[in-house]
Length: 138
Image (cartoon, rainbow, N blue to C red; front, side, top):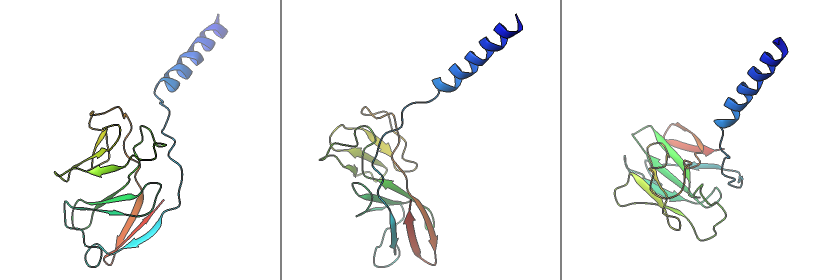
């Protein structure tokens, strides 16, 4: 009796853990190791953005405040293998949309807005910002 109770408990725990996981999008890894100067030659205003080369399909640098940024891969997580798809920033400068599937993402955190098929947020890169130099890396 005790064994069957332990077995059932173990199955319930395994089931609960596996139900919370969805497959993550398979965006190909590309080394990112770039420096930018968002106050001078690579100027980006607060609430503004800049497309830069790097990553898998390019990078969006979004400036939240004078010292805070969000760095996103331009590849849509819904279908990363679509060769002609790129995430572009809308005219409102707060939402970015994939050119093929129509999925859109909030640039404050990369989360999907619910428009389009993507249930995953944009891939974010790490950064550090010191002495007016923005270092982006993965």
